[in-house]
Image 1 (cartoon, rainbow, N blue to C red):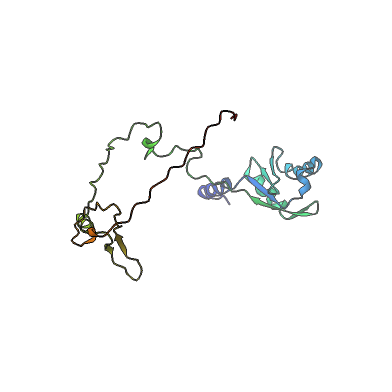
Image 2: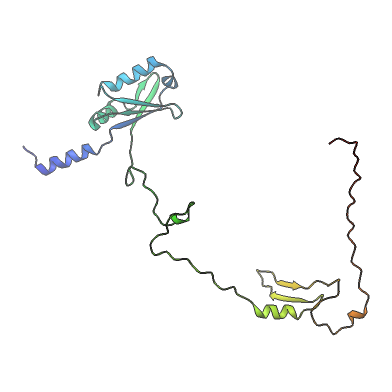
Length: 210
């Protein structure tokens, strides 16, 4: 009985989509060192295809076997999977190749390439953003200007989860505070500021060689 043409096309597509490479796992460690052992290993797969290629990954203890035909890879996997090779049970798995988008590395999108050095031409329609005007809290400045030495101003009241923020005005030792003060503190003697004594340079001795 002759099969419909549509069914044969579907079967062909399924065989074409099969991977044409195998990954051999749990192979003996001596396989990566001895050439004679490599020849025996490669002979197992060359019976399915003479032009098969091998890639040895010593760090992973795996071998990649690449066929030109997916059917040959499937037949080799069917007959050699979980077979004994030099005292080790060799396991074969299909090598899955995943291609995301184009196989070539594409350049990045020109979103912010004008920020690189040296600068290139900015994109079309780009405009320099203007800096916003600084926000001046005149209420805070007014409250601070009315404070005298030793006074404090609470900016933020404490809450169960946040601390309070308080500004303390330091005492002016020079007595030139611009804040109005109606108290009689000017009549009290103010402490003298300590004099900074400069460190004396050592005497120069001409006889000492540098």
